[in-house]
Amino acid sequence: MFFNLQKIVRRVGGSEYRDTFAGFHPVINLLYFVAVIGFAMFFTHPVCLAMSLLCAFTYSIYINGRKALRFTLLYMIPVLIITALLNPVFNHQGSTILSYLPNGNPLTLESILYGISAAVMLITVISWFSCFNEVMTSDKFVYLFGRIIPAMSLILAMALRFVPRFLAQLKVISNAQKCVGRDVSNGGLLRRMKHGVRIISIMVTWALENAIESADSIKMRGYGLPGRSAFHMFRFDRRDAFALLYILACSAAVITGALTGAYHFRYYPTVKGEWTGFMTIFVFTAYFALGVFPLIMNIKEDIAWKSIVSKT
Image (cartoon, rainbow, N blue to C red):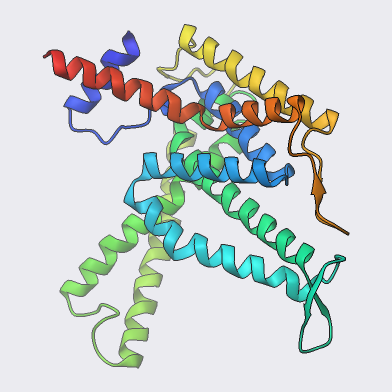
């Protein structure tokens, strides 16, 4: 009830806060992403890859909107195509020969399929990390690791904030330089290069000064000293307990399937793997249930929100 009211207040206040899963306890967020990213990196079964990609891409679209769709079209699809094409060029394993390359090496069906699976795995992990970057904010990192590894948690938190802040400041500096006629779009080639170098120089200076100021501020506040406490609003409640049991149960089923060979799939020398069977279908279901968990929470919360709006 507290979370629903909190979300209503944020929505009415005009905030862009949309993701219900981000409102879970940081332990739940971290555990979930460790599980889905780890499974996406190690399970090469086509069904697992397809389900993980679908869940990661859908969740990324949900929390990032058009930005995620634009990133996928401009970067992810080209990476997918290039990675899928590179493997058959350099890897010639496999027994099903489709043709021969100009250098005389065979082009095999197995190398093409393995290249596609490797490309799908790569963009899936990137998509999960994009969601991770949105959900695991710097305050959550400091909360989780501030007492265990204070220096490392601070470095991770600053690293996650650095790229967005750097891009925002770069836009500010570019606009300021454009007002005085020193933008990269003004003048000839050499003048534009000179303006670009000037903007980069200003950015580097700003980054160094910001780092020094941050270090002094952190030192003055006594960060990392023994006995120092930190303010936070995170509370582990029944909703988090349910999420923890759900993630652990699905992860246990997925790991059990891997240990029993339910995910067995090979690409060389011939394509062969498990597709049917009770255990295989069961672990596939558990894998999909794990990947779709944030979307289920968001859809449930959206339905509740619409129900409240309709009654007002």
